[in-house]
Amino acid sequence: MKRLLITTFIISILISSGCASIVSDSKYDVGIKSTPDGVPFEVTNKAGVVVAKGITPDSVTLKAGCGYFKGQNYVVKFNPNNSEVFYKDVERKLDPWYTFGNFFIGGAIGYLVVDPITGAMWKLDNVTVLIPESKQ
Image (cartoon, rainbow, N blue to C red):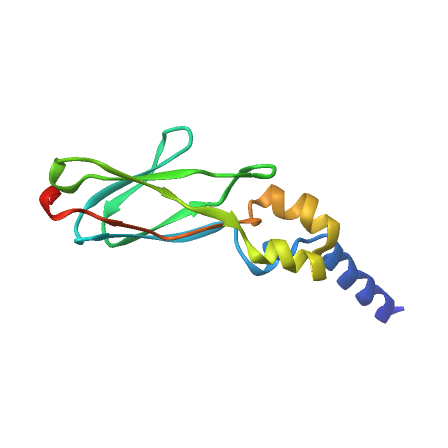
């Protein structure tokens, strides 16, 4: 009886979770770099709200999702020496654990419910910008 309860518990945990939510995350440390270093930056979400600020090189933690099956979009604004402004999007793509992991482990619950709700289906890339010498 005890063995049946443990087996049932383990199976229910596996069935009720998504692979990307288990192995991956819904928040990422995104590296922000520039050439040259020391450039002030701001990160805004798709609503235009500033969610992070810093000076390159730096790392900021950003949520990958913003609703059911919706990934968050971010733009990094670089402002070297208060001169010309440069913009760079934070690239978002499907997390491989969502794509392939749910096929083998998470199943339909992972594909359609858990990972889309938590935002773990998305992955955010680092951002690098080259500031031309005449703009420094």
